Image 1 (cartoon, helix red, strand yellow):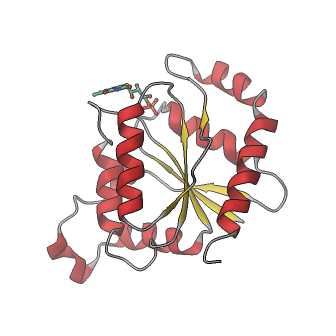
Image 2 (tube, helix red, strand yellow; image 1 turned 45 degrees about the vertical axis):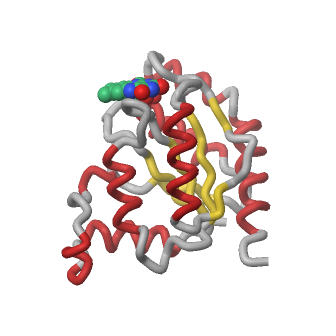
Image 3 (tube, helix red, strand yellow; image 1 turned 30 degrees about the vertical axis):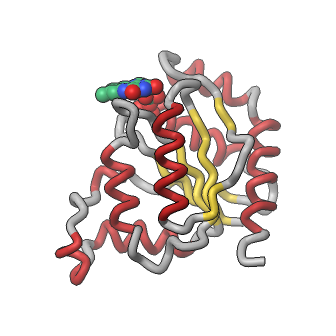
Length: 175
Ligand SMILES: Cc1cc2nc3c(=O)[nH]c(=O)nc-3n(C[C@H](O)[C@H](O)[C@H](O)COP(=O)(O)O)c2cc1C
């Protein structure tokens, strides 16, 4: 089971990215989590550009097409999805790689409830299979990198179990 991690934050010290790294380190045997590079390299979506799709978009689409499921960690900005992630999804929306793709949201904030619901709605509209939960949450806001890594080490078993549940859900795709 190959999972692709997408981070909705472009911050160098992003807690969401750290959370995804922790998931990668906790993956059970037979499951891998690979983080995609920064979504900040994508140009702003413009349907006129789809005839000659830019290379970073093709790279993202290829990675999405090659994975068995997406793991998305995303902050909330002003009760919305951050522009970088929404822009990436806009690029993917009319492509063949995304319909039916299993997706699980994981959360580095105990808040962000509005963006979560919005993101689920966007993903459902794109015909993704959104993992119905329970979704993983660990409030990391305000914590430093070293402290986060310590906390995440204590979460490895729970994370592995969450990934196992999602892998089973993803494996049911198309049945
Ligand atoms: C411009 C801005 C707007 C934000 N708006 C919200 C918000 O509406 N709701 C919320 O729960 N958090 C909000 N936050 C807090 C971020 O969601 C929080 O800092 C996030 O978890 C950081 O993620 P990161 O460490 O991965 O960058 C906002 C942060 C910024 C910088």
